[in-house]
Amino acid sequence: MKERTVDQFDPVCGDLVTDATHTVGHLGAQFVFCSVQCKERFQSHPGLFVGCPGEKAPKQAGEEVIKQRCMRLAFPLMARKANEVEDCLQNLLGVKAVNISEDHVDITYDLLLISAEEIEEKIIACGEYLGHSIRDRLERVFVHVGEQSEISSLEVHYKKKAD
Ligand SMILES: [Zn+2]
Image 1 (cartoon, protein in one colour):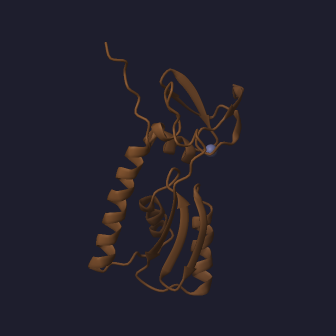
Image 2 (image 1 turned 180 degrees about the vertical axis):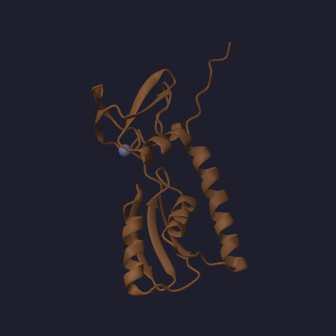
């Protein structure tokens, strides 16, 4: 069967999508995505990307929520491994810049597209360990909780018209 062709913008990354491989129905409309990553981001926080009549979602309004953080690793990385992990993080949607020096990962990203928690998961998937002192762990929890509440305050929540 031939792939259905479309000409629609991906509401997450803004790219033009020409085939309907990744789609989601939301509030009676059909949205298309360039990748599984964009599709999953949309499914977990549609209100960041699609608003309702009279209220634009932050992404539709052209907003970015830039975060700069320093994440601490459990062990310093040798230059070669540091480059490998940098490349891996650089390719993530929403990551603007990354620099690893010894056990510090300095990273800049757009919270509309990716969270610290997802970046940390990627670091672990690359085979590295995050700092495990109590302070490191508490800092991470603090960041995750803060980002979650920031995201939910930014999301446009579709309200049913009051009867
Ligand atoms: Zn996309």
